[in-house]
Each structure stands twice: as C-alpha cells, then as structure tokens.
Image 1 (cartoon, rainbow, N blue to C red):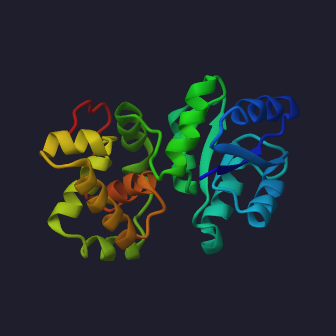
Image 2 (spheres, rainbow, N blue to C red; image 1 turned 45 degrees about the vertical axis):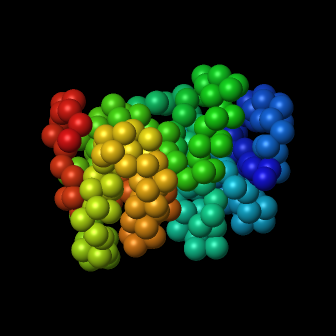
Length: 228
C-alpha cells in the first residue's frame, strides 16, 4: 500500500526538499503541499492523506491549530499528524499531543529517519521516546488539565490487562519492549493496546499517553527517571 502524504510548511524550499526525499520511497507519495494551517486543513479534507507532516509555526493559522481542527473532524480520523519543527521543546511536544498529533520530529531529521517516521506514524505508533514521554508528562500533562469525564468513565471499561498495557504505553515502551517485559507475544500486546484505544476512542498511542496521565491511571513526578 502506498502511503499518501501532505506537506504543510510555509517555506517552499523546505517543502520541495521533503517532497524529493519522500518521493524516493516506493511506498510513499506526496499528494499535496500547504503553505499555512488553513490550507492544510482544506487540503486534508479534499485529499484525505494518510499522514500530514505539519510545521508548527506558519502564518495566519499555525500548525497546532490546524492539527486540532483536523483531529476534531470525525471524517478525518484515519489521517495522522506528524509535527515537524525546529522548536523541539517539551512545551511544544505537549501542545502537539493535546492537539491530537501522533508524532513529533525536528527539521534536522535525516532522510531515512524521515521515511521511517512517516511509516511509523501511518502504522498507528508514536515517535516519543521514554525520556521525552516522562519529561513532557511530568511538566505539562500531569497537572494542568482535568480529564474529560468520558475518558474517566471509559477507563472503567478496560480489563485489568488493558489498563496495564495502557500504563506501560504511557512510559514510552514499544509493543516489543512491553512483550519482552511481560513475557507476552508482540501480537498479544498489540491486540490489548488496540482494544484499549477503541474503548477510549484514542486516535493513537500518543493519545493513550495523554489519557493515562490525565485520568490518573499513571502518575509522574518532575525529575522521575524510572519506568514503573
């Protein structure tokens, strides 16, 4: 299957460079380019790409606002957002996750890493390392917002094993790492995670991280460097 990608960045040169890189892959094709957030939303609705590579800082409508609008549209649920920016700070990561983004990469990313990032995002995974996950959660996700009541209610519908899987996902562990830790097959872990995502109506693993901390399923203290 060919992955369809939309590029959203206000710099035409950068869009051109990324198009060239992405077009070298047999399984990825660029279907459109947007110069601002408003155009990104419109083209996403028109083209229905699998992945939108979205810059944060763009004129008029910024990338975070556009991401939130795309992710709030039920008709665009299948589209994943990969945030691309030079501002790799915890605050931007937290804002991107709250907006609904599934991943976060810097503009200095290499060609192969970019291709892998697109494939990873399209497959429903996230691009947050355990260290980045702990940092952003401790500083931004664990305290400022109250979890929507629907998330707390749906959390009660999870089985004990599903709750355990969500808690481990919230530490930034991959399915393979969870499988090795829990002596399960990666297929079994993936099945538990997918069922939890369905019950919680999470778009992806990144949203599971947000839900896990905002509902109190997992707690993080600033400076905590240990996995549960």
